[in-house]
Length: 115
Image 1: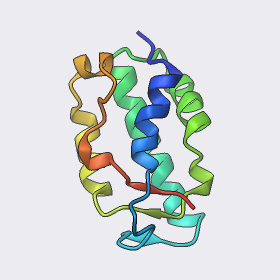
Image 2: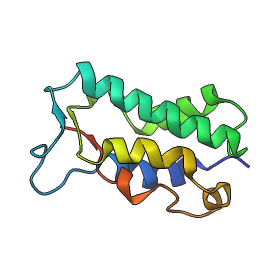
Image 3: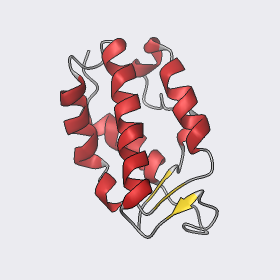
């Protein structure tokens, strides 16, 4: 069962959405690059690991290609305050949730801040 790229776009828009106050309130706002990029890639890896475990993707590489096609981690400028909670919640996603349209934990909403 491979998740459609369209569904990933919806979910990743939630991940990368900015609040009305922009990047203020970030736990990491380094102006792009550096830690924000590293943490964005770590989130993608964590999501893909869970998706492979749940058979939503055959390989992590295939998942990363699709996710990074819609979430440009190289443009990340900061990390939202619930990043750590998101990283803890993703490995516990119920595999059955991947058949729905909003399977990402709410703690992941807005955790990757983009310009």
